[in-house]
Image (tube, rainbow, N blue to C red; front, side, top):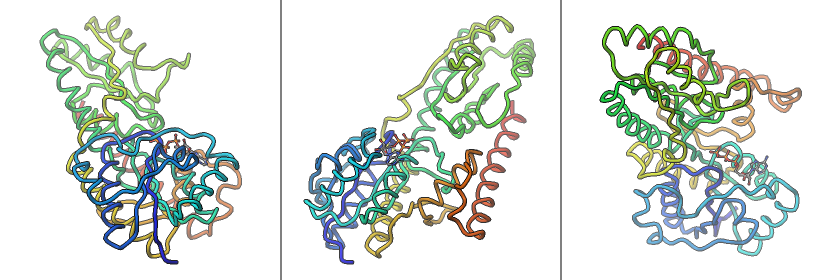
Length: 356
Ligand code: ATP
């Protein structure tokens, strides 16, 4: 099939580097003689026909900007048949022959639906959580991590002056990558993530012992996904308990959306540029229903349903029948990939514990 016009959209939570992907897609498509249309607010804009032609100069100087020039939205109607109907109407009216969708797993579910309805679609990661099991890296992670480091280093300064402890909650709904890597990198005395049980008593003892040895400041990193028995954020209660048990004045700090913004780092600009270029080439080669991933520093692709099912396998969320459509060789590959991730997390966690 010959492509004349392709669309690009950003969907779900925003991530630094999304603009760099939009730029790469536009430049590479235009160089191949294919017009690029920027679709505003993700699948909402696709349903509403809210799109604009992008030229090479429209994307000048956005590589260094955080957020997304195409904006993003959560568009629940797109999950319904009526939403798909509207999206297909937009593609038909504007002659959009293919789409590149940048986001997380929800965005990929939308992309696979579009592919199934005859619009070739390639998914590309743009999420700070680094929680797509099929890829070593998601665009936005490095920038978000560096922002966490900067914020916690600042907190550390004032904790040191006042002899305090900061319990810092970082984003990562279902995945503890941000908390774990940040915890190691800021020298946290405790890391609380969903993936591993937290030994609170041992952490309290570490704080008391270190305090006796003359240490003045403490940092504990908690992933936002961890809740207490009442469903409340775990870090808030933990902060009170640290003060009561160790007698160290303790403050709870939620970094929240601050880590989503800011200029993308070198790592994110490079990943975004390489992955964005690869996505266009795949589309123009006639490929569809794939997600662009990075494995062992190489760009590779997986079928979107494979990647989504692998995610479920890694998170132990597989339901009956989820594996039925896959060949045994594919299931075996998924098991290997899930195991690689589990080992990676375990090794990192063990090394974090040994450094406390
Ligand atoms: P992040 O997790 O980083 O926020 P995400 O892409 O997972 O990113 P979601 O809000 O889950 O974010 O999904 C983004 C959009 O993708 C939704 O608003 C919706 O338009 C579309 N989408 C999500 N799930 C589905 C689905 N099952 N079928 C079709 N479209 C979907």
